[in-house]
Amino acid sequence: MGTHFDYRPFVRLGWVILLIALSASATAAQSNLAGPNARDWRAIRHTIARQIDAFQRDDAKTAFSYAAPSVRRQFRTPHEFMSMVRTGYSAVYRPRAFRFLDPFTVSGHVIQALEVVTQDDAVMTAYYVMERQSNGSWKIAACTLEASAARSV
Image 1 (cartoon, rainbow, N blue to C red):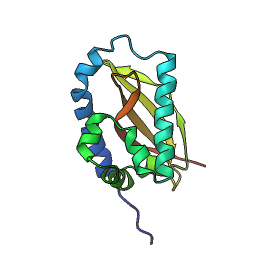
Image 2 (image 1 turned 45 degrees about the vertical axis):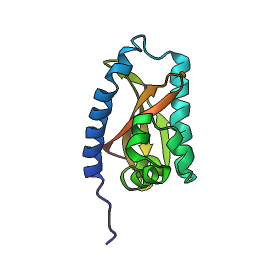
Image 3 (image 1 turned 60 degrees about the vertical axis):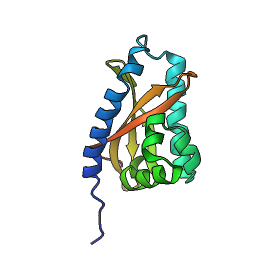
Image 4 (image 1 turned 120 degrees about the vertical axis):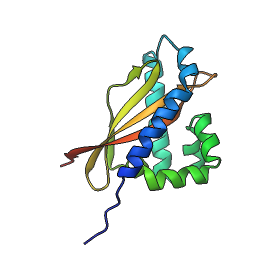
């Protein structure tokens, strides 16, 4: 029998990281009470898609560039960041397919959801917490994966 990677501990860890990111970015969220407009949501989707594209090309430097400053401080180097993504976030590191779901905000926190089909045809939801930078660009502050009972056919 083949060995199947148990990603459940990483999902729990992802929720913890999500909660930390939400609390850490509370001040930034307060300064953006109006919420993202249509142009912002397009930029957010572009940022996420470009990071996934960089993951698929193993371009650690580019993938790392889309991470928010707090994430870059936590992982310090593109190599450390990619190592974490490879081991804990294979769904977005090497998705078979993905599509953007409806975005939303929670208490001023900007979240873009994706439906992701993994290499073994599992369906997961990835929740990206986005952070607007002082220059107006959007960076990824956290990503949490949620498993689904669904399978791709």
